[in-house]
Image 1 (tube, rainbow, N blue to C red):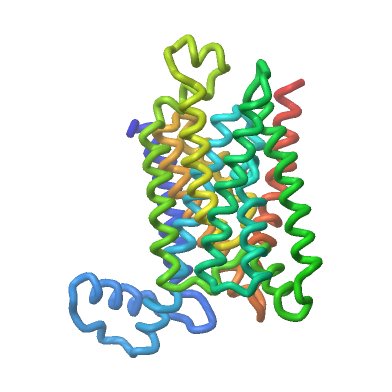
Image 2: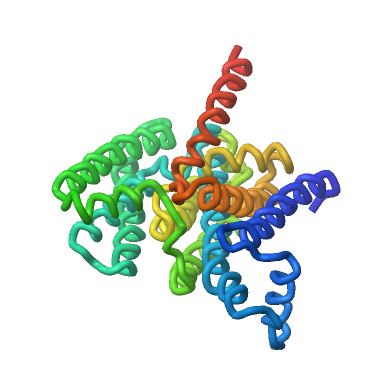
Length: 337
């Protein structure tokens, strides 16, 4: 890590630490910072906590799994967005550009329509995202073009629209009293139902995909160059693109399967991380992961504390992301002119 990147990583780590402290201590059942430290230290050392069972249960059983899930989902979406923006050389690209979110949404609402269990619904959502991106890539590869990246993006838009129509059809056929509200709530994104059992199927794909992207960080710098230049430097752009897309889709699908559709994280956070540590993926990917985890923690804490009822995460991320998107468009317009 270069010395110039240290302040950026310090800011990202500060956001994550602040998010962790707020997520554990703030809520309808407030927890003191001393009690939090005491419980965590006791669990790490194997000693008695010395606090009331209610406080211990809130920290470890209620908020603990949700906090860990928020960190992993936020980090995964941020890393995926960073990878896609670099791969497609477009600052407006987000993790669902190739239909991963739409495919996962169709899989989830199908599982809800057939009244399947929560774990099976998550599997349907996970597989739906992977199948959608695989279909996009197969269709895009079959179309011969001088600009394969543009073909992939356009194919992703078309397939995503088709999958969105499928989601609309399933919602139209669903029971309006039970199934439809469940579908709507899931599509808006939430971590309210997260428990410890959800962490294992989330951690595996997120860790695997993130490790692959980190291992390819130097090649991703080359992939940010125009196609001809990357090939001239000896990079096999075709196979490498498949690996990057697969890894980013893996973490996106796992996140969507656990938390539902949470937009804007993969668009906003990579730009914030890039402003902190620069465009080098060796620094950008870890910074985006740290900042993404802290960002979603803060959003989730706000979602469950700012009103009497919990606000879906997709709504709050859109409230934050929309003005950022407008600012990004304005800054790009200045650059164009």
